[in-house]
Length: 214
Image (tube, rainbow, N blue to C red; front, side):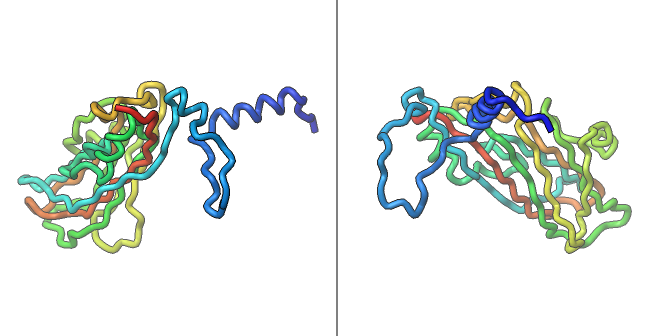
């Protein structure tokens, strides 16, 4: 088996270090600290802090028995009528910039009575382009990312969808004061009871903040 050269091994090590998210924290069991007060990343205004933000709520169908909320990559405006994630405003006041590394939706059914003709299917798609809501199952069929779930309660399946930061278009840091969505998870279901609560939706974000400032 061919062995890597010394220079190749060094290059691989540098790449791994470059791709590390954030910096290593001091061990919880540490009793002493011997490092600097300000590290080089802080002096470059590039210190990062990655954390999880989440919000949840029970969502309902509209006046036509349709369910099609769109969930965004913005913790300050998750979509579906949900309020901003708790903790967002506090972190946004501390850090100058942020970017969403990934977010997911998970739902638990609260609706167990189907009306005549109901399909019992919640279809979901991923979209890196526009936030326009789905208007039919046929619209969702156009997406290669389409994935379907049962709305029926207690079917034993984990109902979760995740979308990841991907590409230069949505990997840029944004000012936390004007943070906007760059990618979305869309949902659609129809022929359900009118204006009825359907699912308890949980939205979770892995978000990276950069640079303490205003």
